[in-house]
Image (cartoon, rainbow, N blue to C red):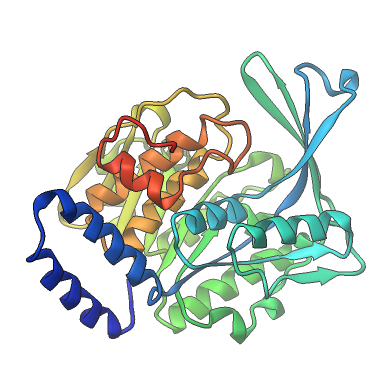
Length: 356
């Protein structure tokens, strides 16, 4: 969490201001401080594939569906948008096809306040496409991404201008398994972040459909251990480290890597924050009415990272992750339900009404 030196002056101003007001106004000053501080925050950089996504207007097999709604889907762009809603400066990088789907994706992500200036449009490869199938309270996903523009990302795309004013890099385990060139791109991003002493956030985000006959567990385990913040689900921990037990996960990770904190996500059972030399911090789930779970993990990551970037304590970071993840499930779609900064602050304060 690196901010410009001007933040010290800002903090002194707000400390003096709090001495002049009563307790009822104190929370408002805190929110004003966070808003002012944003001008001096470093940028959250993320990179990965985003696809055009066709969502049916009815449940059941797609062969019987007549109408679809066009949207987009991608773990990294989900996080970028969710973090931008929380007023964190974000930058998203990828390759898109020079086609209507690609332009739609760039425009929508940019419209949510995310910096997309580094995105490369590929004239020879298409934008990836996916279709959702819904029914019985569940969603299935069909991918049409072979040979996509994003699969052509390579280490040569990791240009110096990507790193301007970057304070944290977030990556997932999806990108390095898309292709050999994508693996090299991710490893180059890790190398550059380490060279520039930029903290790395990593979510293994295991998608076995992408693995084919390959076993990518050694690769994702190695990348996990190189990260500063490891954000993973309990099932992913079991796949990569052989256990779901927090103490054993902490021992396996902290004794072998650079990780400083682990956010261990376990759905409706809540999450646990694991730190070096500190007792685990349990995070209770935030009560919600789940409509669609897709995108919850990305929203959790965004909420957690937003708290971390803002300098909040670990328990509040975890609480922000829990709130964001839960709210994301209350609306169909990956990003539509993710909270704004104002909604997050109300939820943290325990407000009964947070959607106004």
